[in-house]
Length: 321
Image (tube, rainbow, N blue to C red; front, top):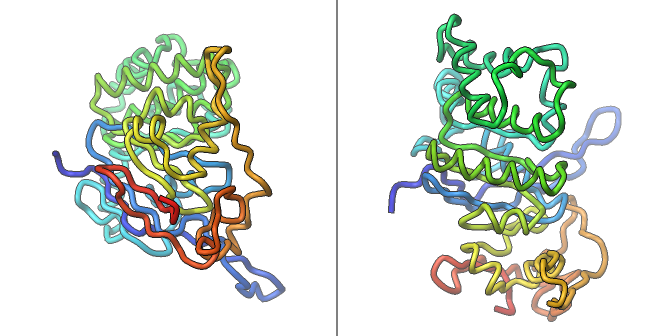
């Protein structure tokens, strides 16, 4: 097996909660709490979970859009948090982010071609006279046309804007792309087109994806390995077949039970979780999921389960497994 492209070890990200005129810290929101992820070149790793589970914070902390609280992040063997600002800037083009809402990430006053070419100029990757040629080539590879270069963001549909977001990330010729819920705001038919585009670009450019989503049906079509997060912690991780054919954690089983079945005659037992997701500022003791787990025993409320390998490549954090 090749060397990992990205290694995330014991990553924690806590946001301080401040109160009063003096801004005194009264607690911490534990958005990411001891996460481990390894990505290999050319693979797609899916990160799934409910809203508020910490998925997006993981992606943004990896890219140093948030500063970590603890842990280690290595990209191409380099510790990202040990790099100087100049060294990090040189590495930035190799790691790109695709946002959930492409319209909010585009300047409405700047033409799409200029928005895509801006980073190329800033990093001095392409001479100014060749910017239009390079950007047009990237737009075309993402299913857009050359005449779209001179249009403004409001002139595009939602699916086209997401293609622009993908083109902007691809223009820098990255090796790792972190896609933060890139299809959640799109119609189902457009979702399929964007997913197929992700696959096509991965094959043609050898890209590695960290694909963040709450939609397991999308993750199933795109990802090689999947990690399931709950309240800032990883509860299960394995290959696509491991999670969809042999789910072990009760939370994973509950998420899968909510995925629609394309054949109406087939039925799947629906697992409805009780209560609301607890606050990440004051998570439950022991297993964080025990307050909503239908199978919880006394041990679950007092002991933190180890995240361990139960079969080759299949990890789970549950006392019942």
